[in-house]
Image 1 (tube, rainbow, N blue to C red):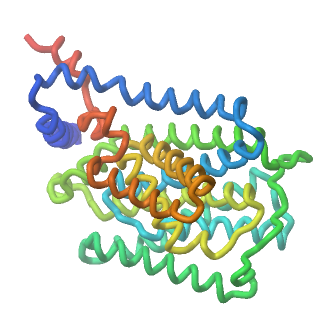
Image 2: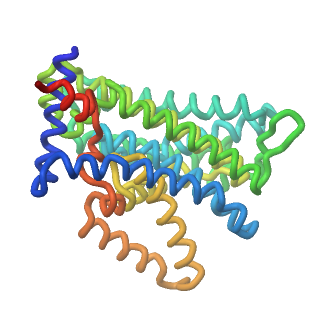
Length: 360
């Protein structure tokens, strides 16, 4: 296994180094390795200080954006690290939202230690079922097959929610009771904001650990060259199914938080529109970096909010043009302005310094 790990590290590292060739290999690596933690630190500090400077209604809006950033993180795991174009990510997001809404409405269950795990489990279960069907067949699934399969699942869930009276039909489920911890209710405001931010930080750190582990190394190789990973003995489809399921669990957690923050759920939460929306977040910010998905969600939602307030009639057109320009001229997203290809792929195995010390 060690030999395989070294081979994969050399392969994905070599391809990244070729992309950065031109000024010496060692210098670019040393200069870019510290950029990612700096970007993450700046985003975290800005998020911590935001409620102190924002007005109350903007704090509510910022809370919604943080939840959507968590949702974007789930898609980046699936697409950015495994190359699975899931056009049905909203299925896990919205199904968890409906699940916790039914718990609150029918069973009066709103305790945070019950509803959030329940929503996470709902997202995980739906992703496991859909991923097992699309990814674990006798023959490897093509990108188009998985894309259309997830899209169909999201569309079917949307139609089901609109036609099922028990789920509220077109109106959804309104007036969801606040999420609670003992006698304390989490309502809109700084408390809910910092709760959501704390959850995002914890999930982000877990995802960062995951993608920098041995499993993450296999995912990086899978993204760069799936056939070569299969040659090394890895079951590529199983790896895809695992990360697809994990992504569904994270989306379910985000959907649970979103339902309680907004106070209602509706069919659009499981539909194609929201599924496409999360794709735009990651495209805009940059896939395969985690922090790019967070930045993409913040910028897209922030720009949408400002444009809709100042250019009410044409703001979707302006936003569409901005997204198109970014995709055309920066296909790796805005994060590519500061993050090199070598760091986006990741560093695995022994550090270059250790290798130099061991050299005769």
